[in-house]
Length: 329
Image: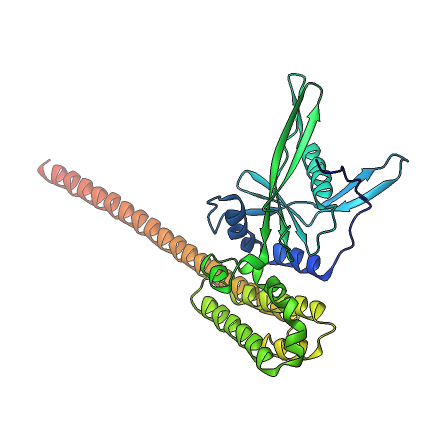
């Protein structure tokens, strides 16, 4: 039996990878759906609504001090609540944090009915950017209460287990910025061996080609493509600080100086175009309504004129008949 481990739960430090994860979730929300389907074997539709929830919680410690805790993501698809944590390095505390965050979410969503308090934990998963042979496929949380206990599994998604072919086949575009972790252990070789470095740059040329093809086919928007590329560059820059050749050569393939605001510019242009089209449609609808009103008004005038004519004809007929009667008299 393994020794019980006491975990230091003072919280983890945010990394550039956490920032990239949250940017993808907030700016390209629909990309999380295929990831959820993969992890939990769900069948959420690509166009289902994803509602990103507040990820900040305050926990009161034993000394009364309040500590802020920030989850990597808490969101709802359909009627199902999910909680994902992105972990770059195993530090022994992730499962404790998962339970801590899950408890806060469960308390937030709890309800009392007929003197019964119901707390429902979210569907939780951990996304591991790095892994070893000891990285599990699942982690387990066991909760003991008086005279009973229950447990639930927390699935682990290992980014490095997914080939590029599988990522594009399953539309796991969310994982592309973290794909560089699959090559991390070979950075020293890439830095010193030009042929090896060329192999890596070819991989990322292929990524750009396939992202362009997906955008042209309408599978993803230009904005999503730009964001995925920009976030890939951000992860690359953070991971290759000590490997200047890798950073420069692969970074050049990924757009060189492309930044997050470039993707946002594309999104803003799309929004402007959408707004312009909406206004045009509204103006066309207004003109159609005006024309409809004019036609209705003209029809009403014609009907009134026709009624007056019929009335006049009836009056003329009455006068003629009266004139005939006067003549006979």
